[in-house]
Amino acid sequence: MNIFVAGASGAIGQPLITELVRQGHTVTGMCRNEAGAQKLVALGATVAVVNAFDGAAVEQALRRSQAEVVIDELTALPKDPADYAAAFPSDRKLRLEGGGNLHRVAQVVGVRRYLQQASGFFLKAAGGLADESAPLATDASAGVAASAQMYAEVEARLLNSGKMEGIALLYGFFYGPNTWYCPEGAAADHARRREMSIIGQGEGVWSFVHIEDAALATVAALTVPPGIYNIVDDDPSPVSLWLPAFARWVGAPPLPQLTEQAAREVAGDDAVYYGTKLSGASNDKAKQAFNFKPRRLQWLNQ
Image (cartoon, rainbow, N blue to C red; front, side):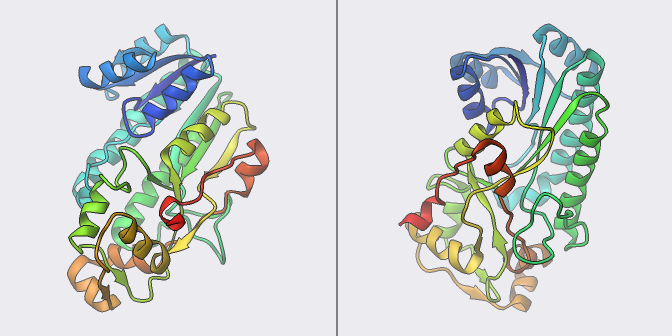
């Protein structure tokens, strides 16, 4: 199968291309610069060095690839989650405008199927875990609501794909190599400096997914029925459980605990929402559709 991957040199792009090539697919990876291109060549992909905001160049690259499937993994995330608020306008622009170019061109050239990165952690569960019918938390604290609204726009675009089949992959928080949540990542550095804390009772529930499991699920989604799939692990956990375990895993000292009021004064409303309001997600649909088998959240095994 001819497959075009945008955002190919990012955290999920690299294991995704590795698995696509391993399974015998012909892969064109789109990236922004020569440094990214060298990584992709080493993985066995053809490379298109293209700016996603250049619609004509995107169309030329996509036509040249003769892609049957497009996988949109475009992001502009910072290396440190503490910088996410500052990076958000650029990330939003890339996903909506750059991704909009890619989606439009894919329709024009007759791509059969379009896989879209989306969010499995800004969902709003009515009770328990959020399934694929759960709305995005567009009424949350300001920063979370803005992110949720961005993902809502991305999903709405996908659902208006005409004859092109749309697959929304609602990933949990990535962990593993080249992510924030690994022993060498920025979150671990913050934990070791005691810059992370349990807020209130730490009842916000987070769903993670290992970056390699996310890549495997994305490859599996090449053949599943069109629709929305939560790509999360089996361990949706409250902050009060996963964060102390993460700290121990990365060799950090015990983390402080803050009241919601204190946290709001120090870190703002979004931090309180993350710590106390997030909903975990269910992966039942992915398990039924393609036998998804994510590994156990790594630091809970310690």
